[in-house]
Picture (cartoon, rainbow, N blue to C red):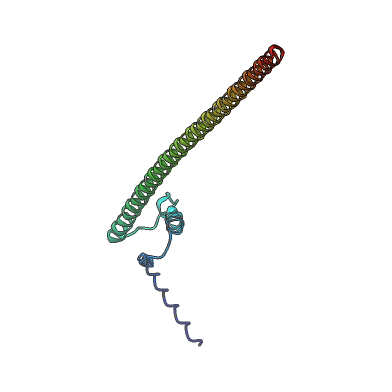
Length: 177
C-alpha cells in the first residue's frame, strides 16, 4: 500500500518591506540636484498615494511614518521655494545696485565730458582773446611806424624847405652883392 504524500507546508507570508529612510544629502549638492531628487522621491511616493483597487492593509505606524515623510517633504519644498525667492530677491537687489552704479558712472562721465567741453571752450576763447590782443598790438605797432614815417617825412620836408629858404637867401645875398 503506497504511503500518503506529505502535505505541502504553507508558504510564509511576505513581510512588509520597511520604507527606506532618507539618507542625509551631502552639502555639496547644488539646488537643482536637490530639486530633481525631491521630484524623484515624490514620483516614487505617488503610487502609494493613489487609490489602488485592492490596497494592502498597512499598519498604523507605517501610515504615520509615511504621513510624516510627506509632511517633511512638503516642508522641504516650501523651504526650497523660499530659498529660491530669497535668491531671486538678492539677485534683483544686486541688479538694481548695478544699474544704479552704472547710472552714476554714466552721469559722472557726462559731467566730465561737459567739464572738458567747457574747458575746451574756455581755452578757445582765451586763444581768440590772445590772438585779438596780438592783432591789436600789431596794429598799434603799424600805427606807430606810420606815425614815425610821417614824422620823418615831415621833418625831411621841413629840412628841404629850410634848405630851399637858405639857398634863396644865399641867392639874394649874392645878387645884392
